[in-house]
Length: 284
Image 1 (cartoon, rainbow, N blue to C red):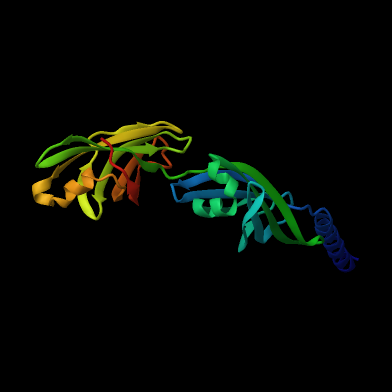
Image 2 (cartoon, rainbow, N blue to C red):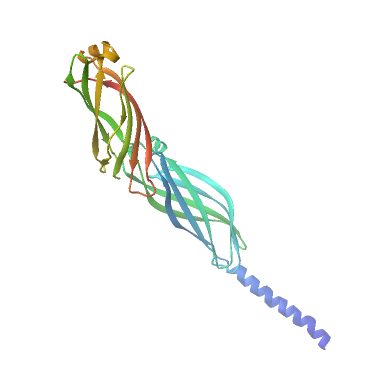
């Protein structure tokens, strides 16, 4: 009897174990996916970097694997960046897993795609993603997730000539003042810590140097820089006299750089090249 009882006992154990595994398979649930974090990792006048972290929660007593995902990143309701990631993430039984998605966007691309954003300080974004799983019993499934947020939009400061006048005129030279306006179109205050300039008129250099002190640029505000210019007629020639006394517009070129400071740690100090040209008229 004992010899016959052992095989029967082993069959019962195997049957019970099989029922337990079968029961686990029948109770398989879809994993849950959420965006656990969305943070700015980079910001400058060229563009913005965003890092999205997806969290996968596995409610099952069996491990699962996410076999990549697809995503659609929208700005102001417009599809902007789409893609697919093939990286896999193994999530243990009753555990969690994470996967990061870095997104980098250039402001020039944003403004070209959505012209209305040129006058805005920020824009709403929405990320829609779908994670692929191949689960026992359920088979291949796609688990969707969405997240909304806001991104800052930066625009380059604008430098313009506010005034260009002759303050003194003599036989051997003249003193002039060039007043430059620096406009901050952003909702973030800046400090113009330094400005290097090289100012030419009709392809002749008239002034070169840097501003002596820092200037505060309030949000949506404007500051001015006055550059003194002294012209020596003996060195530069009598043609300069005719340019100054003439009533016509002069061709100018302004080169240099702006050094801006910000209280935002993610932005920090910014060095911007300056190169613009146009026409200007002297006043007296």
